[in-house]
Image (cartoon, rainbow, N blue to C red; front, side, top):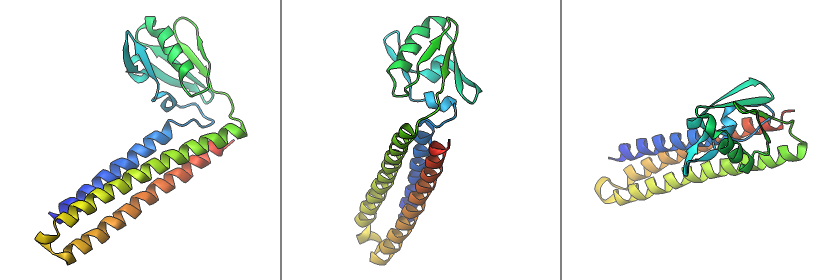
Length: 183
């Protein structure tokens, strides 16, 4: 029972780390990647639809993205959603595809993006600490069944797992900061 809780904590914390890394990929760097558009949601016939379900996104070169909608009538909706997003990129619509020219980031914008990445990392750390808190509460509820020593050992394991996963987020944060600040 105690081992099940510890394993559940490890699994949930691993998912939190992966989710945080996925969020990091949506933050702009100097290079054009299709992941930049993962957060874009298009109002398609009154239904909020992720851009990835409406169009193919490719990166023909390091400074541009090409969006090819599956339904040509959605071009205007996609263009509007990109304009309303926080990307700060103006789409170019030629009637068949939308091109996004990714401008070089200014030093000031890079620093703003580093702050965004740090906030995402802190959200990931908070999620991991919340998982730890929940598991610790569950372990304490089992104390009468398995004894204090077993609970204490399990709490130490959970703390080690927590520290390990927070370290993974910190390493990913350091890498992403380097990517954002790279000129």
